[in-house]
Length: 108
View: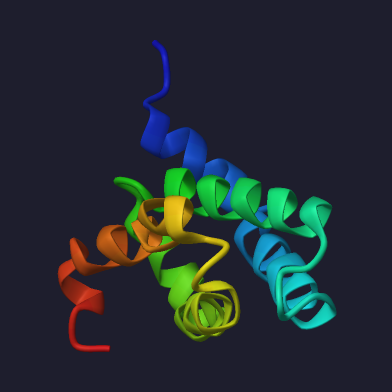
């Protein structure tokens, strides 16, 4: 029997990719807060896309995202890169949308 995408995400979550990705995004945001370098921005976009996919339909991943400071990091990146991330805003805020769908996390 094949495992579902959510169960695969749950298995992957045990390797802490959400926490590691948030660490990289926090570092890149502080390394280049004005968005002057293209490579960090490309890596940040890829990181946000990964987090959006990991938190989609996986409450445990959403919980880890919140517990690891994901909300604060998203807001910091948005404040620093508002203009340069204009086309990537749906990706940047995608994980927020996924978190909101989890009943247990809505009160946070």
